[in-house]
Length: 131
Image (cartoon, rainbow, N blue to C red):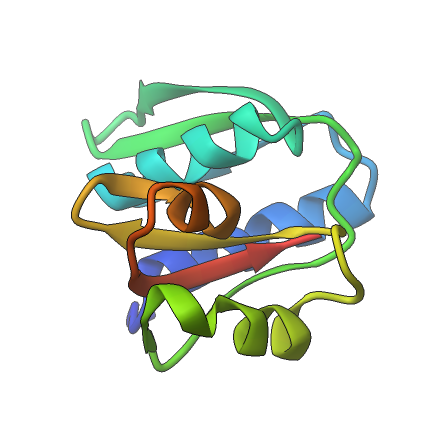
């Protein structure tokens, strides 16, 4: 199996586990980017928590405790560069309605939500959306 986008695979895996009412799921391979996205999701209340784990072959993976609050989460491809004034356009495209869900953005200040990026007056690249 080839991995073209580990972040996209991880988010789809999480959504599928959530749809089957599982309490936790294991995502692999783990990466700094995946951990940063999971931290944003935890801070926003979409997941209970996550912890790094190793499998028997010593590969990095992440165990995620699911909350049951994810309706949809996907990676955004291509990873659009977004100026601070342009978030509105992408909110309309990816989120179901105003104030529902988040866009996860990587900025020079780290991986944050689009709302924090607006507050910090910074742009970035879109990684994913969750609602």
